[in-house]
Image 1 (cartoon, one colour):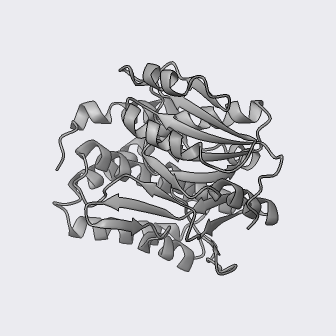
Image 2 (tube, rainbow, N blue to C red):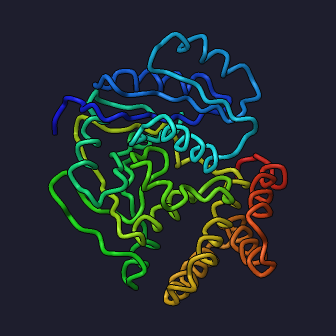
Length: 318
């Protein structure tokens, strides 16, 4: 891969909420990327503490760092969609979406992903290698699951293909670090905003594939992403609820054109129900998706239900 950045304009969009220390680490790692035309956009999702002011004090005088301030906490999906629209309005063709709890390793990741997306004209998304930082060490995210394998088996999604030693087509890319063509991103309406949080990248990825584009997983030994997110720890009840709810929403909104999806969804529901105690809140969320679908709820009702999930189920870890 070429280490020199072309003149193509790129933004690194970092969605921030209340955590100065994490965002500081993320931005500092982004500043090390090779390239003269990389814009770093810190998108504040209406932080309720002084973290935004601290970030402005730390990075406000750096030319290629700018701030976009949302007027309320829009959640992951809408917050990122706003950032992509803002970048495109600035004439930026590609955006690297990053969670603020990520850290870039190596100086050429952005340049190399740009090379990939420009080389393959049907590529809309490039996923870097992402390692979760856990108490037991680094864990590589594989961009696959038994659920996705079943969807491919029933031809609801296209099969994965090995493109080269470093590239593989995939069914889903992790939302914590995602390099996208901005026009392709908005062409499928970006992340589904009514989800509020969790599962957005899965639905987005499927729509990219159904739109005859591909997602490529770029594997590099020297340039990758650390996600400071330990999945080995217990998960908040409200997060489990949203994960299950949004899995259900995705199914009910998209299965009619793909009837065999019902088999996969039923098998998935039975698998979760088999470990009922562990997956109780996830199943509650799936049932809620069914109720909202039967009610023919609109996007505002879905969004409000997601927004209120934390108040309803609390943040106490299981």
